[in-house]
Length: 317
Length: 248
Image (tube, rainbow over the protein chains, first blue to last red):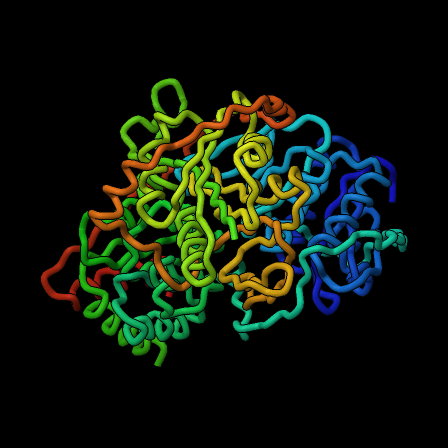
């Protein structure tokens, strides 16, 4: 671990680095390129992902073996490594756990934390505010922790010939755990990859019911795409929450985005306005979704979608 | 148990915020409301009180006059005491960390997991660190347990069961139920409750992180709007455009 390098904490499962962590690595590399520093990747209980971290461009890799995931324990490890490396910056991918760890480490040092950064400009870290209505740029001086929003920085290039020095660090487990995770339950079986999808068909409140929402799924499948949703469809239980696009879900940029029965609240639009081509279907001709749509169909999704599905099926036959 | 809910007044998040002529967020015409996540926290605390006994208080940072309407609305849906913290230029977590011990002794401090205006999701965590209390984030439910609480934490793919001693801080996400509405009677009662102000000498917010620019995101151009009597005609037109662009 080079002194004063930029640290990036990578979450990994079974040797696979999670996507948003790779985006955090990309953000760290952008910062490093500007400041001439190196990037050290931190893997906790995930030494099997060390080679992969190097392939994606980490200059060095630090592995730590510790007890199972407990936020207090992991925050202590990251804080200790930041001190040891005399690192000014720690990057973390904004998974739920990542965003929490970022704030915990920052709180422990009493230093700034920029949550959910979406870009790095010459002036600082860019992030969205007011539900995506506006963007703010935060300039930090001195030590800081940055969490990186998924779907914003992209993965760094993978070069399997790259290697990086790997060092195993020991961090004494001296944290007295107070809040303790007793059990973890996985409810959502499938993992949803909205960020890499080329086609997303998304549904909102206008789909009317779980039954109606099935048309969104049918069209997505027909187009080889992924199912997205706005918040009302999630809250009504028509589709699991890992399909959510927008402020409290994923930021996406497929080639084709079809918004069905979605009115276009800022919180949703801010997550999908980077799409290549947007088709919107809504019965309300004044729905704000039409302001961002390349093609807007004013009509009832229950009339439009069956015909669209039929046409596409006919073309495929 | 003594339950405290930290609330923040924010601009109504269903309204798109634009920039004014000087490049600042134009919040003038937007109704201030209690941050949605804080309303979930208040409802959860109130349900906990109804099931297990205790008191629910709400606390906010800032001027009493500016926040009174929001605090009264909290008093009409479960809280029985309201406090404002006057802390000069301190950041919210620091102001709360100074104000809370001055206001009383609490077993559980609830915060919304984030605010709808800045969405940084840090206040609860920083408050806990400043008060040296344990914190559990993204809480969906809680129940009393030996020496503390058992809480259900929402995760990306499911949930976790977490044990935490009291006193502690919890940050709350949207559970399966909605916050209750006030009744005429509860609104009337809320009007009569005095709101206390705690003035603290908190250190001013650090300038290690500074907002140097606020900008509007790139606007997309609206394209073609298809409005046909027959759905089939609309679909035919739209399909034509998708086929031309080789998107289907």
